[in-house]
Structures are given as C-alpha cells and as structure tokens.
Length: 290
Image (cartoon, rainbow, N blue to C red; front, side):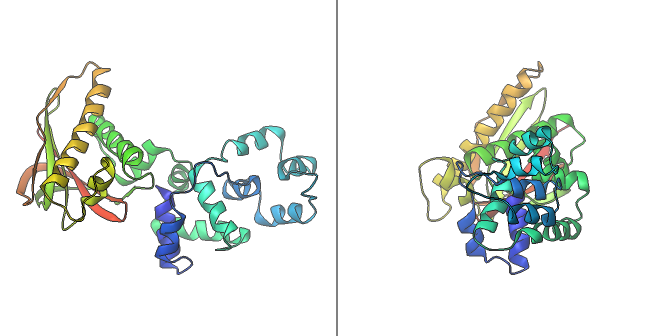
C-alpha cells in the first residue's frame, strides 16, 4: 500500500514522473533490498554511518552486514532481524529508486520524514505502512467500530491485493446517510449479519477489477464487465463467509446484481471506502442493516 502512497508523494515533488512510478511498480518478486538500505529505513543506522562503512568496504571480500558487525555498528541478532526485511515490498521499492539514481541514500530519511508529516501519520502508523501490517494499515484508512466490518474490510483489501493489484491503496473511508452510485455491481449477504456490498465507479473505473479478475479484457465498462465485478464481490463475500464460519457466524449470499445506472441509496449507515487500483478509482460501499 505504501509503495503507491509514497510514490505519489515523489511524483508530487517532481522527483519521479507518473510514468516512471508506473514502470517501477510492482517491484519484482525475486528482487531483494540491500542490508544497508534496510538499516537506514529502519533507523538502525544513519546514512552517514552506512556511507562510512561502504567507503572502506572491500566488496570483493566483505559483505556490508559482516563489516557492520565487525565495526560494532550491529549485533548478530540485529543483522538477522534486518535480513528478514530483504523481501519487504517497500524496502525493495526504495532499493529500486536508489539503483536507478532517483535519489541518494542520505535522502531517504528526510523524504520519509516529510512524507509522514505531510500525510499526518504517527510513528506507529508509518511503521505499520512500511512493514505492511495490513490490519493496522486498514485501521489508518478505514477504522471500523464493528469487529465484523473490520474483518470484511480486511478480507476485501487482501483479495484486491492478491487478485487485482498488489499495490492498491485506500483513501480515508467515511460514513454517509445517502449516496448516488455510478455503474455498479453488488451483492446482499443475510443471516447473522445483514449487509449489501456495492462496488461502484463512474466512467470506466470498474475496469480496475473487470480487466484483472479474469482473463477477459474490456475496452469500456459494459454489462459483461459489471458481471465480472459482481463475481469478484461474490469471491470476497465467500471468503468473508468462510472466515465467519470459524466463529460459528452464519451468512447466506444472494446472487450478485449489477447495472449501468447506479441507484440513489439511503441508509443510516453507509460505509464508503475509496480504493485506488491499476490506475483507476472506485468505491466499495457497505450498506449495513441493523
């Protein structure tokens, strides 16, 4: 989630272009971040200390981590901890930026600090984003009082990241009493929990899902594309129902619905979750019946 959020900030600062950001993401799965980079991001070492070590490192004979231990900068335990982050997606993203000369090692901390301050993240929140603690990340953007709604939102975002866009991210969720929807698909769940789940977007926003959930490709959102979005919602709700069953909570799912013309919906509690994925924006709307 943070790769796009931080990447958007770099685009705003004109450090990156949008096309460069799109080209960098998603980061390759088999790529690993350097130990030195991780140490700086995790604030284990300053960039100055890292650069001093790198300057006297014989790269043909020594590794950075071993040299840092020998110089007394790191313990064996701390190095082992750092190495666990080599596949962290944000660490890899920063490494890609360094490798391409987008910015230098000493700029990492100032840029991260400015990003944190501009977006208003606490230290705990920025740590959750960097270390991809998804449950805590969702609490930042979509804090829900209801445990069931928290579980649903977690399932939704996990499924989007796994099947649609691994770098999808959220804007701040909000509660509305009434809402005009655009093109949409939806599904009602009933039983021990009663809720209608909509995914809606104007124009071609739902191509974010329709073109990535199956092998079908659409040039514009039509009824077939919306049917595809409905099947995606059915997938999310099916996973949610399975999770609830472990807690002896039972729900039934109605057949998905969709339309090119969104309704005006009115309810005391409409939870609206703005989502960005694959270059498109859409809204997940939870109409909760209590």
